[in-house]
Image 1: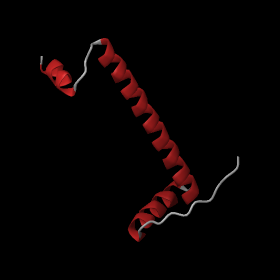
Image 2: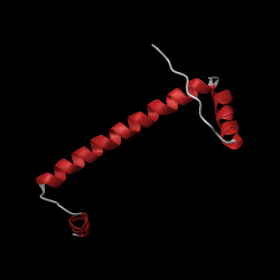
Image 3: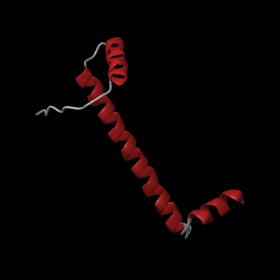
Image 4: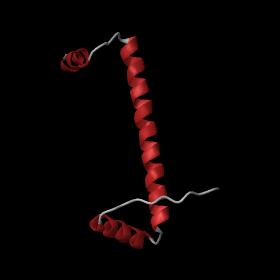
Length: 75
């Protein structure tokens, strides 16, 4: 797999925390950021699936506003 190098700026405290996490897990900074990026992409995918499912339910129930959702939850 081809890789690209990225330069990012982090404050010292955050970098120390990352280095401590990396040290405790016996990995590298690169592995840490790869895992973090993959986890974030997966989280975003799950949220998108949830919103898509919610839109489908709203369409099926003819819900067109947030106020209607609150009314349904109150009842």
